[in-house]
Amino acid sequence: MIGDGSIDRLRREGRIVIVGASLAGLRAAETLREKGFTGSLTVIGDEPHPPYDRPPLSKQVLLGKAAPEHTTLPRRLDVDAHWRLGHAATGLDMAARRVRLADGDEVEYDRLLIATGVRARPWPVEAEAGLDGVFVLRTRDDATRLHRRLTEETRRVLVIGAGFTGSEIASACRERDLPVTVAERGSSPLVGALGGVIGEVARQMHLDAGVDLRCGVMVTALEGDTAGRVRSAVLSDGGTIDTDVVVVSLGATRNTEWLAGSGLGAGPRGIACDAGCRAFDVRGIVTDDVFVAGDVARAPHPLFGYQFLSLEHWGNAVAQAEIAAHNMISHATDRIPHLWVPAFWSSQFGVNIKSVGVPALGEEILVTQGSLADRRFTAVYGHQGRVIGAVTFDHGRWLPFYQELIERTAPFPPPFPTLDRRADGRGPVPAEFPDPSVPTHGPTVTVSGYSPADRRITFTPGRA
Amino acid sequence: MRLVVDLNRCQGYAQCAFLAPDVFTMHGDEALLYDPHAEPAQREHVARAAAACPVQAILVDDLDGAPGPAEEAPGDR
Ligand SMILES: Cc1cc2nc3c(=O)[nH]c(=O)nc-3n(C[C@H](O)[C@H](O)[C@H](O)COP(=O)(O)OP(=O)(O)OC[C@H]3O[C@@H](n4cnc5c(N)ncnc54)[C@H](O)[C@@H]3O)c2cc1C
Ligand code: SF4
Image 1: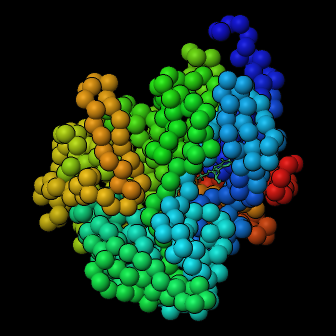
Image 2: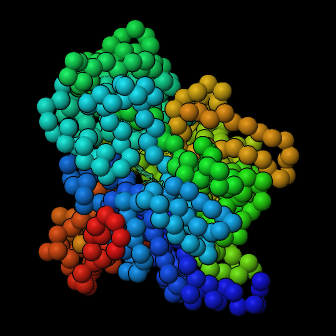
Image 3: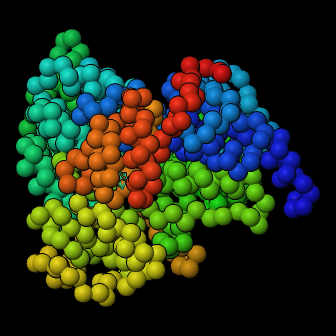
């Protein structure tokens, strides 16, 4: 193929289709144009809205500081695409290179990018999920509905699940002076993503803010009145909570059903791809014309033993989309790998939480700066004698330093003396992640797969 | 005018909150809150904030006053 001019032709007059019109889809479209793609570009999205930003939905929007409809993402340039918004893709014919739409239409492509992301996992009992007052928070429409309800008279909000989104929702409710109960199956908030040591800090933050925090319990049923409005929730410890607003925050499900039967290696854990964002087919053979990016992708990362990481992180969606776009219109020798070091932020209870690397892989944790008690600290995660991740609470400026340690595979515990070390920092302690065989709800990072250097198959059951 | 801040990159230096206080505010000691849809009257302030951000974390469209891409209606365009 190289040198036969086919790539030049593709760049000039090829047809590129992007399915998923959100953060990854938009950034990929912009990058294609920036890199000189002049062919036809079609962006298919099932939501009626042009690409908008999700992180503000559980922060600014719930705090009443930004309107949900005002979260539309800025454009780096006018991408000159055919936007098919409000149209779901329902099927893929890889041999004929066509995407099928819900309205029966078909769109042909030379290169396809799949960026269909994830959706909120609903409350599992359908009749209860359908009660008036039961919400999830993933889309702009979800945020509009939830925000409207929170401005009406509310006795008590129940948040089910204390991961990042659930904790942010609880924080926003308290800031609005709404009574909130949080029910979490794990031993503390954020335990799945950051472990029990940091989870304990998060627990104190909830309590100090006046959250009625219930850990180690599950909600077993939601009960409604005759008018179909939610009234109470039953807990596994026998307690009940009187509530009229329930926010189900139990993690996310990948949007891959539409690819069933296509022959693409897509399933509930996402779409596996190589480091160049090319999707694998069901046989484990890499495709050359189907690319993936964002929350729906699962890619091997050399820094983490080539394990397949699926990251529900804003920064990953941007970075992976840009790499995918570049590779889609490049010769094989010009392709570049997606080597982004995972990073995300959250803000809750007035504290800025940031992390790099993959804390969830850590066995031990060491507070290197600040102190847990002050909620101002940096903590480093160690995995088999090396630094694998770091988290900061109101210490974000230090993160680039720790990112470099991760990139250099620095030893753990790190060899430098910590300057302002207090009682917390004497030595590494177990990070206290839950036993992966005991299910807790969704961590933001899931790790699975094989390492080429170590052919044993390590399987981590989904913490779903 | 639409904007977004890459909060992975943001170091909380609060330059933006100083230059465009109606759009950017600090929430607690370090967390940045911003209005993703600033009023046109804020254009100059936002432009200055975006230029001054030491880590260039602020992305704004429509800065030069050109109409941004229309809010596409559902369906084809
Ligand atoms: C409330 C909330 C708060 C968040 N806060 C943070 C944060 O603080 N920090 C952070 O790092 N990350 C945060 N995130 C995560 C971040 O928003 C995501 O990582 C990012 O949106 C991923 O972008 P994406 O384009 O890959 O997927 P998505 O944004 O999920 O977009 C996928 C799009 O594809 C559409 N789609 C799905 N199936 C089809 C189909 N068959 N046909 C057509 N279209 C389809 C979907 O409807 C959706 O519009 C937050 C997310 C939420 C929901
Ligand atoms: S100026 Fe830049 S780094 Fe500073 S707070 Fe604003 S966005 Fe963050």
